[in-house]
Image (cartoon, rainbow, N blue to C red; front, top):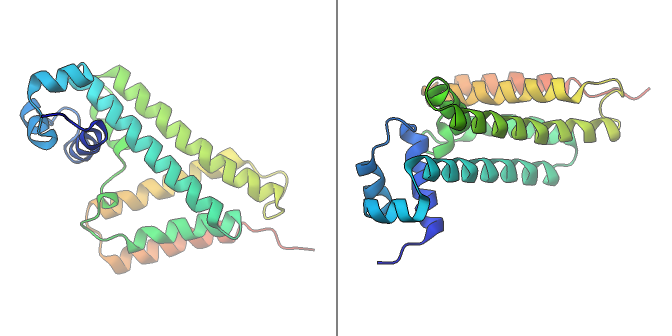
Length: 196
């Protein structure tokens, strides 16, 4: 039976994201992808090869969604605040209610699979670059002072998002999550430069 590569990668990404690289067995992959071991290896070379493609898919999808969301915002800081608040509205059964796959992978593979861990770091840096660009636009638009460090703000935003994802992952009450997201969003809104 012919396989659809996009469907297979989506299934692999979902499985790896949920279970992690080490906890995912070949049997798990066979069931999720509806493929025999020989077909999996023929298509993706190895479990590591399949994982790296799934991780790349996660990164490209996540980065693309963030960039698109920021492009639709009325202003850069408005987009950042709205993005932070959006985590309070994620249903507990939604895939985004899990911890970030990039961070989970880094923790899971740092001591055992250096090539995978390094790719995770690269993608986390790529996400931060996309956030840096938002703050650079905020400076250019006059929302932030010219001496603002956009990379520092990007690190802060990434840390906030990771914290919210962690709270979601452990099942924090929606009211508490909303309050935390609101606090974080307002922190960024207070950065807006007041016109003289």
